[in-house]
Length: 196
Image (cartoon, rainbow, N blue to C red; front, side, top):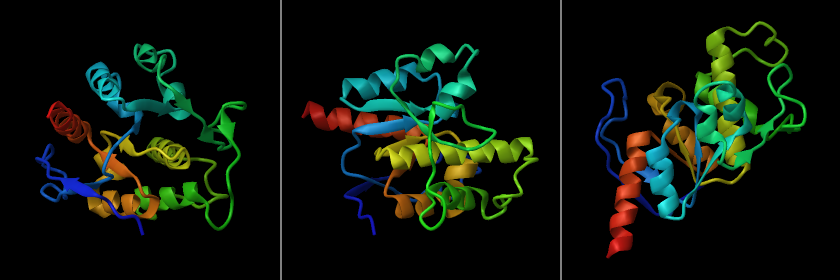
């Protein structure tokens, strides 16, 4: 069981967030973060994190999702972590082979972020747009977990925050999951602590 050294309280940034007034359990010091695609471009957060010595990185899933968009420049100088290979989704040469069977982190993440409603292996040939997005969300978190990073910063409260998902994912994978305003608050707190 992962033990977190402290927690921070946070304001409710969305009336749809069910966990509005619960404190967020976090590791004592965040040194590495993964930005979900939906957080970008976020130059202010990246600059503030770097000023505190926090490494901001993205998954190759994010790089693919922003390719040929105005956001591609936002990820051009960020470290990239290779996604797990998913047939029909990943690019050859940019992905690592998955662990299939017991301990399959990607499948466990898919189950948690979808509430168990995602099609099982062998039945994923015709994913809806929403299911394809869920798969990519799970791939980003799997990359983050496998890379041993401290916090995932995401604006996707449905996949990663609501319905107790944040607590379940944090507990199971020993990482922190933060919305952008929560990460900004963490940066403010860390900066104030360093200024003392």
